[in-house]
Amino acid sequence: MVSEKLETEATRLENETRQKISSAISAIESALEKWEATKKKPKMLEERINELKFSYKLFIEWETESLKGSKDFDSVITRLNEFENLCEKINERNN
Amino acid sequence: MVQKLKDPVEEAVIKAERRIVDIVSQPIAIPVARELEKGIVIAQTRIHEIVNGQGKKVNAFLENAQNEKPGKRSDLIEKNVLLNQMYNDLDGGNEKPPTVFKNEAEAAQHSKEIYERFKKEKQNNLERALDTVISIFSSSGTTIKDDESQKIHKQVQNMLAKELVLVPKVTERLTSTPPILTVETIEFERVSDSGGQNNIDTNHIMIGQTTAHNEKFHRILHENLHYAAYLGGGYDYRWRNEQNEPAIRNNVIWFHEGLTELTTQDIARKNNIVPDKINYVTATITAYYIQQLGGKENTLKAYLTGDLTEVRSTINQKLGAGTLEQLLDLQPREALKILREKVDTAGIDRSKWDQSDLVQNAIVSNERLSKEREKSGNR
Image 1 (cartoon, rainbow over the protein chains, first blue to last red):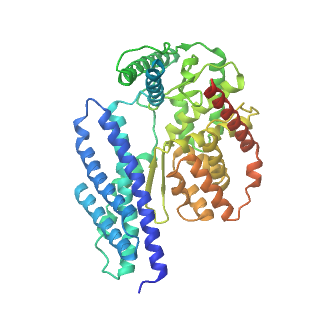
Image 2: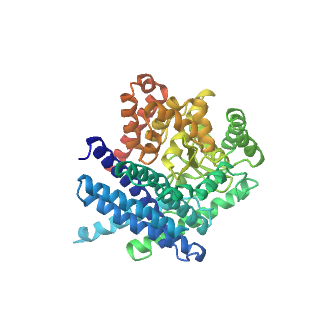
Image 3: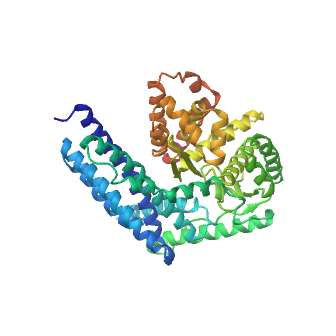
């Protein structure tokens, strides 16, 4: 039995995470647009752009799942766990 | 038939014109790689904040909810060395811009380069939009001699030496690398909301030609302040939270414009000059509310240095945790709406603020702007 408070907090946390991810997606898109629009792409920035693309893909996947997926407690917790894994993947790649 | 063909062409021209406005409002002095890197750093900062900040929150929640063993992500949380390093770098502001112009003639040459680029961009965009080279637009503007504006510019510089004394590094830097003003013909004004432009990473500020004395003063003061904030680090908003963890939110242009216009209005009124209008109305009212909540001195310091630590702490105490962060993630209209709601919920009386000269003038400016837009739309 899950307490109502815990359930509400999980939903709130997922919404907050989605908002932040959405804002990060916009920032990444803006950087990628600038990159794509540049004719002579500086080689020194290529790796960092690839890192952005890597995070972008993970964020988009998580955001889509969060928007479309079931809203019951177990699904919310699963997605929060997936978010943790996502953070870990990004950190592993960036280190 | 002719009509049918004309519409898409017109649409394409309008689209191209809008794109040009977007492009020309970007400062040109920044080399391509640096501009690209700026975008990358902003995106990386956001990613870093999510991975560390939000990751930490979710981790704590899951540990609590599922009674799991802690620690799995704790090492990730500690790895915010990069963010700390960036934060400390931004704290210093800019000693001086990478490109320094010594006099008006050098700055006017820079204006010329800017116009050349405008022209090229116009052509490129039209080529893309219409698939042909049609030079519809008239030639770009030119720099003109305006002794009155230069005199006002000197007055403004003297004024700022006193008004910005709260942040000595800014007044010192303004003295050692003062901004150079050029006045541009009317063509320039069409691409600038405030009738002026601060060319980032240079000490060159521009205003569009105007005959009204107060409006000249308004534009010159506004652009001088942009430059002052650039020297102090005011373009990169950041704060340390209650756990002393750093956060960075650069590129919140509307907030910066709102604070610039608010400071412009404050300093002008203090010196008995009431500008004829208020630019960036919604952003300025939002900045004014923040000033009322966060304190005048703290808000001015935050504007000039970008360090929002104190203002954020005061506002979040009054309106609830995460309020300032939330506002910075929104667009000005939505931010003002949320801010008003939060002020009301907190039981703070804002009637005096709304009756202030500034807010009332802002409302009048907004109405005037709407009418002008309506008029030009009907043309």
